[in-house]
Image 1 (cartoon, rainbow, N blue to C red):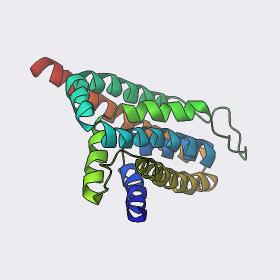
Image 2 (cartoon, rainbow, N blue to C red; image 1 turned 180 degrees about the vertical axis):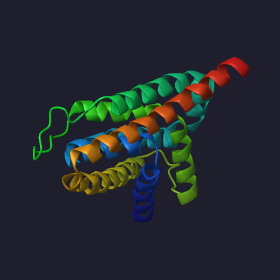
Image 3 (cartoon, rainbow, N blue to C red; image 1 turned 45 degrees about the vertical axis):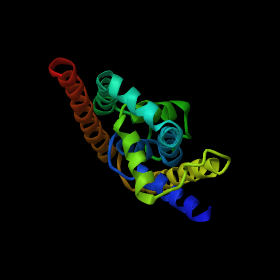
Amino acid sequence: MTPDLLKAFAIGICASVPIGPIAILVLQKSLSYGHKAGFATGLGATTVDTTYAIVSIFALAVAQNFLNTYETFIFLIGGIIVAALGWSMAFKDPFRKMKPGEEERGASIKDYLQAVATALSNPGAIFVMFALFAFFGVDAEDKGFRVFPIILAVAAGSMAYWFAFSRMFGTWRRAIDFKSLIWLNRIAGVVLMIIGIALVGEGLFELLFK
């Protein structure tokens, strides 16, 4: 059982590492508002990753059918969400109410929900989770009680990664001036807009030509 738990913990980390909309969002929150806001954002990603882990174990066939059926609409809606979030980050000043030396704010439910919405906009992430379970050879075929510690280990791995990620960049914010933060915020927003537009484009392509 212990080897499977260690593998599941590694799966949680590996599922979080790829640079994408979530990583950019956590980076922006950590630099703008501090470690707690960044970690709350990462917890949103952890929630979705854990859900995908549960699906990977219990409902692989059902999930594949759902994604194949609604893939176009998931790309369209998800792309719009990501692009809108990027637009907000790129063209709004999150520091307008902050003063030099102001303390970082705590976590908020908004941080968490933004991450959940962004993570759900990328249905391909569930296939990453399927692949990671296969790669690490985690034996979750027995749908008994032993599956739940594996799920918790995946969540723990994801949480550990986002805690370290947000902690590192939340600490760096003290060494970066507001002007630099604004530009980093705008760059992150533009990258998210590009990703969102690409998702919408893929969805439109699927809708019009397939």
